[in-house]
Image (tube, rainbow, N blue to C red):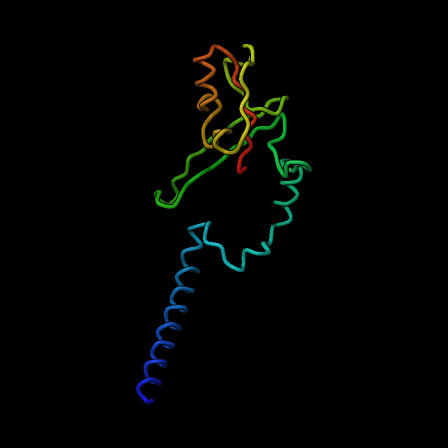
Length: 151
């Protein structure tokens, strides 16, 4: 009986040490890895100025958010694994129709339009670097880009 109690004690001790170690590791890693979600993320706290900016520039009552017409967006992006302090900057424009500008093709007939998420929007590239821009070159038309970032 004494031997069973000792085994149970060690199992509990090892499980507790594993749990504590895992908890410390998650807290350390979540600073650099946005997909590690903890209880702290259940009710996030947003800075009031950021909320005002969101409602002014992005909020849409039907979709949740959109990139508003006649806006210019400047992005700075970097990922874990890149050298610290190294960021890529890009700028894109949303025209009066609510679609991304397509330099050199906007006066051509629009026979194709695209809708979707960040991949459709082609985030992190300039207006003349989207896949719609290259498709416009191939089709001799203006491929409209109604993508919305983070959808």
